[in-house]
Length: 400
Ligand SMILES: NC(=O)c1ccc[n+]([C@@H]2O[C@H](COP(=O)([O-])OP(=O)(O)OC[C@H]3O[C@@H](n4cnc5c(N)ncnc54)[C@H](O)[C@@H]3O)[C@@H](O)[C@H]2O)c1
Ligand SMILES: [Fe+2]
Image (cartoon, rainbow, N blue to C red; front, side, top):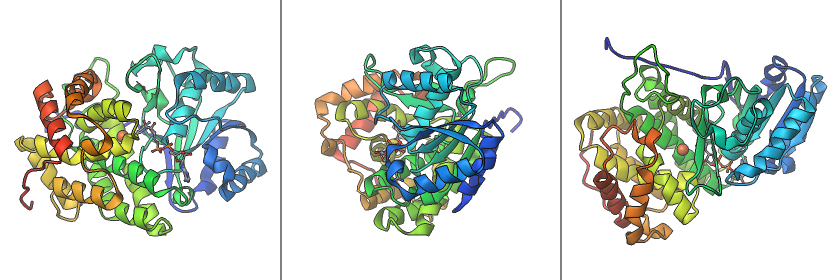
């Protein structure tokens, strides 16, 4: 592959496994002593809260806790937190929580270092320089935000959620201890976990961007030789284990497998980007007020069913199906959705047939996501996918 280019931008430190939280004091100390701890509100009621904060103070760190995280992350709720980080003189941000909390921490780190409003930074590569270092600890297994360069917010002035993507938002450390995910409710586990599988599959099927140096390197590079085995490995962990983690929330092995799959999925898509399931989920989520992973998961079989008409995608899906226990991707994705309670059709989540053109038009606005679609994303292609997803129409798939 003489013309291949590849890029990885990841936290310099990653620790994974039950007990990995023991690395927190060291991972934080590297950056200073004054810690703004951005904590998911659920954590304040968990025994892990006292254990974690005690360990940090015993290690000589000074903590201020911020846990005023509003679901969906309305953009104006973050300004005050940014001001708190500045006024406190935080050296480092510790973020423990679901994707919303980790994303909030990224944006607080940004506002602590650079002037707002956040809308200045919507889009790609607009963050002007380093932000406060972030030590990220996920408590859901899905978004991969602990390793990715993006944070997503809701801005009432915009129809869809918006992303701020910059290599400067990649955390300084990711500490993934599945212990934190043990109490997460079945729906959160299902939605976050299926989103991780979508990350792996979209990352692996992304089209290569035409990157030449010198020139500005996009945040998301499209197909990327450095993540190929990472994406496949993510699918290998998630395929068999996500349904178990949803069915048996106390199964420690299932929780660890899904946490590993989510981490690997984040490493993969954080470099390549994601494409059509995500482009379509943004308008679907906005119209139906359904969670991110419910929408990306619902769309996954339909998007891949249409894209696999392309030979190159079909080849990539064959490799992915080997990672999914030899079951073809579309079939397995639909099965997993059934097993974990993701609705099978857009009609089931209240989307009217007459809304499909509007969804397609809004999705066409997601230039960054469409740029790495493996098949040219015309309005007709998106409408075809949406119509199939509306009625639950999947084509027959031969075993790989
Ligand atoms: N930055 C990225 O790379 C990226 C990628 C995908 C999605 N996202 C964003 O992440 C958000 C979704 O994140 P999420 O799926 O992790 O959910 P979330 O962070 O919104 O959390 C969902 C709910 O679960 C609770 N919760 C979290 N962990 C828990 C636990 N261990 N036990 C009990 N309750 C727990 C939270 O308090 C919250 O009420 C969306 O806003 C999405 O846009 C970001
Ligand atoms: Fe996602």
